[in-house]
Length: 214
Image 1 (tube, helix red, strand yellow):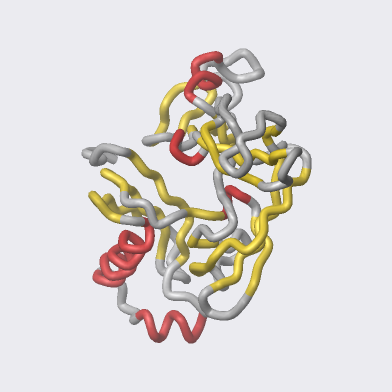
Image 2 (cartoon, one colour):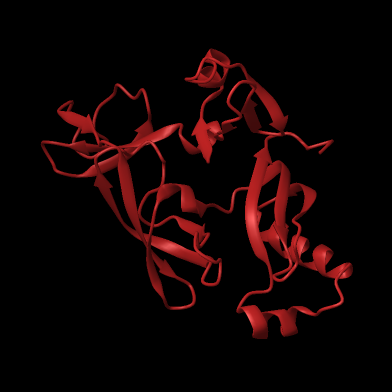
């Protein structure tokens, strides 16, 4: 199981008392119990959704925002519980199907339902479907200085990893598909007929700077 956490928590160590050491890019492993950890991109958690109690409208600001409501200038507002994921209505996102990747695709967020410390996000997909997703199943079209895509051709036994610079995730995924099929005896059309998708996209790792080594 992969535990998503922060750099600060990584430095504190594992709950079992072991030291958490880097194992692969943003992934870490406890030296004592082997539990896997991964740090999160600070850009994804730097904002939060707030709700004004006077005008009833929502607004989006930094996690430590201490100003007025931008709609009515009231100070009578509260941060919504579970809103630290940063996604909001109108964002165009990529949904990564957690089951078999068969229905993954791009779409637009139509509703965010906060549920305690988590959220359920409704996404109207570009292909006409609609899904309810968790925040960690979504990614955006932001360009990153460095990006590593991990995945495989459906039917293959092992994942491949390729590194890209100054690309959005959608652009990197297109480049990744081209590269992994260069060493494959199958074609994307044949694989899609058999598996319903052309690639299994398992993980994306991002960095503000180019990734120089794997």
